[in-house]
Image 1 (cartoon, rainbow, N blue to C red):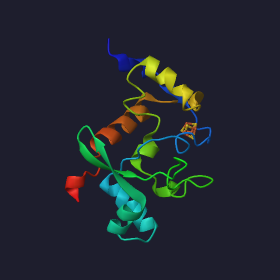
Image 2 (cartoon, rainbow, N blue to C red):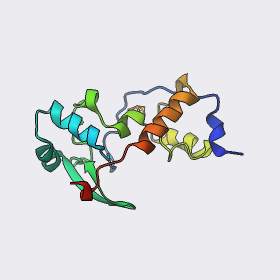
Image 3 (cartoon, rainbow, N blue to C red):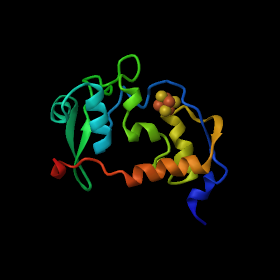
Amino acid sequence: MDDKLFYEDGLRFSCQRCSVCCRGGPGFVFLSKTDAQGIAKSLDMPLHEFIQVYCRWVEWDDGTRLSLKEKISLDCVFWKDGCLIYEVRPIQCRTYPFWDSMLESEETWRSASAYCPGTGKGDVISKTVIESCLELDRSTPVIMKTDI
Ligand code: SF4
């Protein structure tokens, strides 16, 4: 039986606006070309300057990826009493918490409530919406150092 069938009838999720996913701990926000271009445009910066000021290179399984920087506090570089780039936030942020890693099994989804209190709360998000998040993540390449 496919493990992912556990969300056949959807999953409850309602963001509690706690910002735990954006601050106070180490993490990576990998960027697609569209993400980076959209954020740079919103900041009225050339893409290369945006990368220099707000991004860092991270060694990953598949090579060196571009991620947003973190502050010394480990908050996202764009977090200040909320997301400063919410309208143009990266796909990784838009699709959270419906990531492959969170939906590997019913157990991984349940354990996600330890770091995302929105899971298990609110309205049911349909399987179709969940799978569209997964598909968007899977089908959108992130920027690799070899691309620049
Ligand atoms: S951790 Fe979950 S509930 Fe909190 S802000 Fe992030 S998505 Fe919303």
